[in-house]
Length: 324
Image (tube, rainbow, N blue to C red):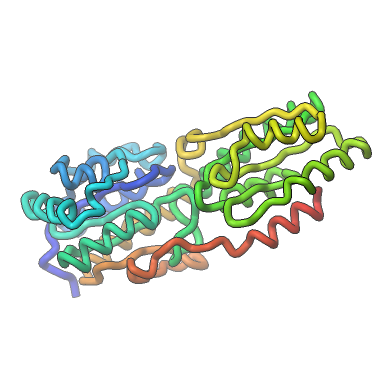
């Protein structure tokens, strides 16, 4: 039974951007239009919602964006929306533009905002997992994560060439302020010797000893992956040089990981989840987060879709130790 009270859907992207967000926007827009609904795009996340920065979207608005990184709706973080007054302003804007339901693409902070609108004000909301950190309950993968990993691996493969040629130690800093997921995945896939993540204390003295022992045995290069929230590559590199006397360089990959054309996996994931979000709204299922587990769509309450701890840390660190 379709919900006839939903006539116009709003879409916003919030927090950090990630490859595949545009594919999700495209899917939501065209799925909604197929169902005879109107669609509004809200620019710059919750800040744009408070400011009334709203545009109409149609088939042409989302043409040729499935392969583009970033988000055509722009994105931002908004402290004002965390207040009751800010949320009330947002609800008034939704009413002004006759937006009956809202799809939010973002991470756990964006989900909290969508949950507040649903619980406090009764706004029909759906959340889609758009974060490169892959750290939200209810889904095996988040939109943008696989592309970010592939981007980092491609860069590290190139770094390895020069590390080996010039017999140097390289410390590579990847994204992940509170989550070491990207760092762990990249370290294993790129054949790194060590990984430093925010969820696990790291033994630097053992690292220096291992580097010196490896050097005595003829090991000419090392790759060490650092998650940005665990340490700074500049500091780690300088400490290694100071403690071992060996030449060390650092590379900060930074926001290059957020950009670029999304992988096939991220495009398909975003497209499936976007269409499912429209279906849920029309079925009257609100305050939900849509994910994918074992290739099957998975629906949970927004309040349950909180930050998910990484369960692979010990396994991956042990794997790196064995293969060093």
